[in-house]
Amino acid sequence: MDGKPIEDLIASVDIKNQYATIKGRLNFDITAGFNLGTRDFKGNLLFKDTNLSPWFQLAGQDEISGNITGEIALDGNAEALDNINVRTDIKTISIALQEKFNITSTDIKAQLQGKTFQVPPFTTSLPEQGTLTLGGSGTVDGDITAKASARVPVSAARQFADDLPDLTGNISLDVTALIKKR
Image (cartoon, rainbow, N blue to C red; front, side):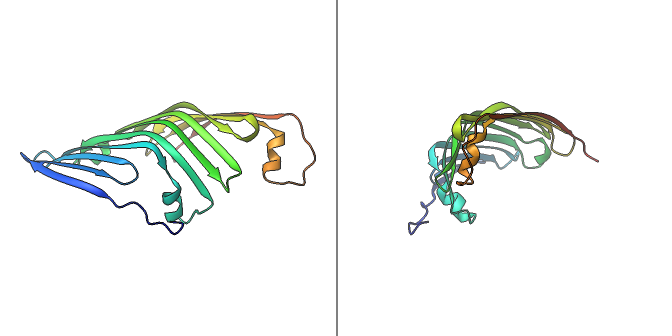
């Protein structure tokens, strides 16, 4: 990307006693295991200040860049994918749009157990000292409850329109939504 190749995937595979282990590295670490007999699996992605720009560029989003530090772990059984467990623990993620609109989120924890998920509230820093707190819970194929609260200085609007007059004050928002499956 940007004239530079994406890092090669380096991986090793080991099969012993009907258990396959995969360890690898892109621009993040990958560890996975699969029991050939029981079909149980587990996996772990470890991000250490991982550059997200190549992934945004692959998705055709050249104007977006960022970094992430954290971990995503999963386990389950290939015969019962509806019962998969996924846990995320993102210490920090920073995203920049055209290098002028920056957001940073910290301590994002989320969990999926089977079809039930929970995302405890986490805070995102917005430009001009703004904040956005998000959280939610529900089921993959059912109802979802989402909560959001925000405080954004109106001066942040200048990030998008340079010709606005000097504005003062804050916009505050507090929303709780129940999204019902029909």
